[in-house]
Length: 529
Image (tube, rainbow, N blue to C red; front, side):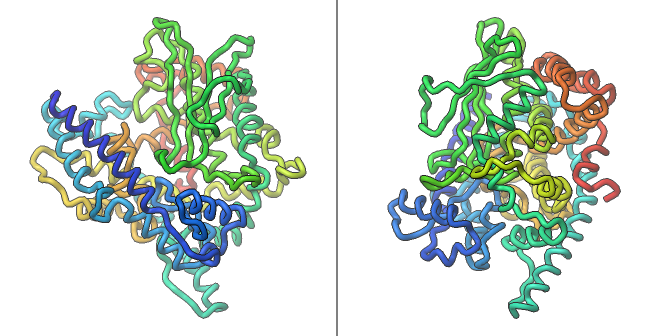
């Protein structure tokens, strides 16, 4: 066991190092601003600054984010640039060089399976889920399989809509083509605009990042839980862009510290996450120190720090984790705060996302960065109407990744070392999802959650916990919505409990019933599939 743990840990470090190098090397370098047509002047300036910072003055760099799909694909009108950016993302860790992770992946799953077998479990999934809320791999896989058919049906409808939009453009331009993954974001945005008249660029002037944080994320925490926040500029940070706030109880008693590190850097892992620098513990007498990290594109000097509404959701999401850490109230740090099962830990964070569109919260933070005017109600209504749009794609890429994770970690003792690409193709094909148009959020070769983090056989947790939080949100809205009483109930029964009670019992205490899948399907617009 010691030998296996050592080798698994070493390969995990290798994977993270390889992926960081591969992601940096996979940045798309362009020669002319024309290749960036469709991006805003600020985004083009940021690409030029990125190139300059890398010693390539006169060129333009689009760095890769951790996911398969890249944000710029929604705006780039040069199809060759879109394809090149998608290709760089899709193949980033498969170039046969030092950043190629495939052999590391194939070795890791063999070692994990051996470890699970040594502990008496047939697969890593069975071992991993034994202490999760789902408890068995059969429960988790069965849950995911129930979602495949309604999601695939939604994908089929969406492909037809996107292709119709491309065909309509082709009549005017004379350049038709069949939709490919690198076309989806651009043309689905056109579908969205045609159906809902909503353009993400319309919302960004109302979403200045520090207003979102202080007047949105913090305001929601004040309304729901009574918290207040004071910025601390006297505390050193490991990077100048990081902001630190002290958090106080409604009574004025200090609760903890919160760090916010939002901008992407070359030497920084992709994605978004929450950390506990110091865990709460009555035994040790420690108060929590948490951080929220993201990888938003930093504006060029002198430009406003405007973000998308998806970025806003990310901020509310990660601070939901932060609240889970800040509200910890246990004796032992090992069971305190976010030290809970993977299929429970995302529940508080996803629940917190709802307050981004709560009317009095939105009105408090969504103000024009130049004029201070509130976001027009008509634009707010468009955002809400578009909530269920493109769910075959958005939910489908997440579901495909979860199925891929479970397929890898359901390999048994007698399965040989895998050809990573062949295994991936077979596993994804078995889902019945439209992988040709809706690729998984992560491929095996850059699936950092399962190879370089703690989500092995646990990526389904994002969807499982979405089910949990939708159940709780429906309960809260039936009982008065965003009130201090409901916030206190959530804090007392869930956020403060850590891992001190059976998760199913904790959930029943909060809602009065077992988890139901229907609220999740309602949220996604998939009910009745």
